[in-house]
Length: 281
Image 1 (cartoon, rainbow, N blue to C red):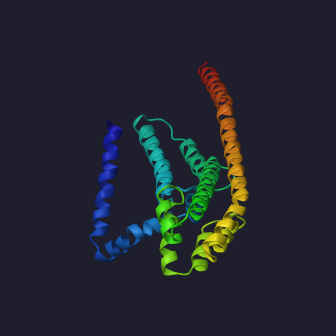
Image 2 (image 1 turned 120 degrees about the horizontal axis):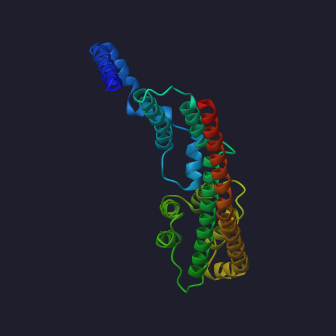
């Protein structure tokens, strides 16, 4: 009870000092300017994390994740401090060490679990995006072999609803096809993919070749490229199988890793018990 009253007293003194400081308008304005939402977001931003989230297809913001990271560590340290103070337990640097480990493990740097998970999500997102892109080209092939194919901007807008990963960029592409010429629109589309993409430039060439000619010639050209598109679909199916195999390997090895961690923890606890008993005697 005494310790609780001490904490309440400390909190009361802190609030009183804060109210005295804030009564000064100059100090209050400086604090208000430094504690605005925009300034806090700017301090919590991480360009590297933002890029990883975008490439992984995640809509969560980098400053939100950093706020959770630092808030969790700070909350854990404060709770541990209050608990030790109330129970009259000696203070330790272990909570600070645990907090530092949490910050390091959740940092977007190589060889951390957080970075590993984001890279896996990035690979899956890229795989899904490429699969939908190949599906879009199969729709495009079917549209050209029709007797009366749809205009490109109409076709792109109508087929965009069939996809999830590339839906937004297809809607934007359909708008650009109306406002700008074909080459500029396709150049913008290609820039949405990383340099060295295995087939986005070939797809751009196919669309340009079929749009800048008459219907019969375009039909013959797309039919000549049917084998290439089928090969892309086959390769993509194999990549999906390999990705699923990697996930299966991770899931299969998880019990062994967890067992090793559990045995290590038990061994550490056993050593602590022996140490406490020996110090007692």
